[in-house]
Image (cartoon, rainbow over the protein chains, first blue to last red):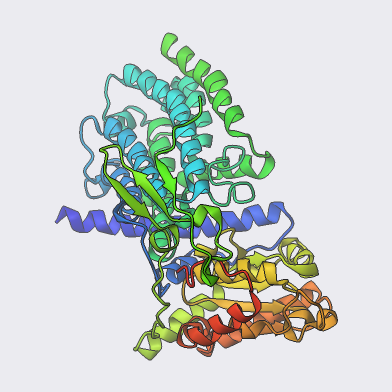
Length: 296
Length: 233
């Protein structure tokens, strides 16, 4: 019976993610003084990509790349408690799920590396090499922040971390452990891959990076994953640092605000080169992370 | 230290079809790490030489109508910047014209694009690249041709190195006349294309597959140094 509610949760998250993506594209368009796409454009793009008639494959891993990527996104969803105190929408959350989710964040990237490698396009391989090296450095401050809050709350279960933050804004990790929050929020910029850290699939520089060869249904799967992954990472940060959510309304508002922050930064700042972005993550965010562990 | 080569190039004979073969496409005898030797023929091994197949529309009419609507609302453009027209494509994405409003977005790779814009005169050398890019796009795909150069050659109609009629070489959905058409004309072209797609007339990919031999003969007639596979997906 649980699986029905999990699928319902996934359905809600996908729809929310698509709408949010459309609204955010409209907001970035307004920053550029344009009107921008209709807010339902992500739906249409998705339908169109799934309806492409002809497809071809470069080999087995080319098929499996998007599958890995999507299973990474869905995997994060499966073990993420969405609504605190709600048995139905806690999904398969359990002790130590934080470690599992961090693992799922990387596995999609690795699967994509194999798929893009078999695609054979030079730009895909350049893109995925950059993606992996950037994501490795993004993980460093994030992992330090996670270690810090694991020490603080003496647990690796997300549900328990959320439970410890209940009782008003002063109990949030944001207030009780600002150093860890700072390190993690800076690494969040790299996770979402908006500017200045979007050199991985920089459309004007190396055409699209990893997904260059993916088309039709493959691309549709990657887009679906992008939607799930974006929202789920925002929800992960909401659970870890911003007190979680006790109902869907609060979840939507918090997830939107957290997701809006890298978009906002991206609309303002130009793009880093890959060597610059790697150095950036290893200086300030990592330093904050180390301080967060020292001063816990 | 120079890398040791593990292959030996087999020089092609002087037949007519090998005349323009590029060195990287020569056959070669490769020695694998386990000591076996085998022959690699890049033109046959690295490219698919199967002819394109027409893909029938969805048999359920309502579904196909809905999908056509989605296709018309989400047009991903592969701007193939030839001639003077490419400079008219860039303003489309600026606040003044803002083609995003109509679901028109740019895509840097032919794999994900639906619409190819040939933006002006096509020299024979560029035609080769245009054909390869067009063939790499996935069905259903559309072609939009800008300017009088693609209709009848325009001011280049007696040029020694420029094609005159684009639709001898690939099926064209919409022509936008003018020399050069302004971005407003391009937007009008998009509207016309949307109408065509919604009516189910945007079947250029199938037309290309069904009349493949005719198109190929036309292309080979004008491209003298044909040194690529006949079809690459």
